[in-house]
Length: 191
Ligand SMILES: [Fe+2]
Image (tube, rainbow, N blue to C red):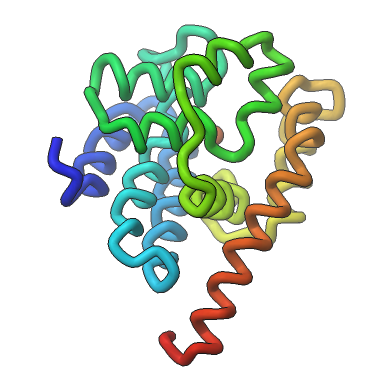
């Protein structure tokens, strides 16, 4: 696959996998992709790659793909083995939103980190920002509202809630880094 026009390819793939079976997840996905497109002022040409990753970040929830039950790993393995996506997309999906903490809690840390390297911080942080400022129905949320929403959806004892607690410093740092980049561009008069 050519890296030009990745976002369109990714949208079609994600739509096929999510729209019918998980419509709310598809709504969230479209919201995350819209956030990704809005980061073009700081990402330039890489906004297309980020938008593609945004469309694909949660495909591991699709019933046909579930294997380990850890959606970043299931999604990334599908992209690598079946969809033959490029490495950047596989890595971004594997590590989205500080997934390494949930991998630890699921005893999948070694599998995740052995199979998928980290991508460059600016892209990793940008995807985390997009996911963590978009609610489950695709609308914009502040990161604190988004974290609270995850805790209330899963409940205090759930592995996902515990993992999000562990990931909170990483998530907040990512959001802060992207907001800093956006405000620098705004101050530079480029928006
Ligand atoms: Fe996710």
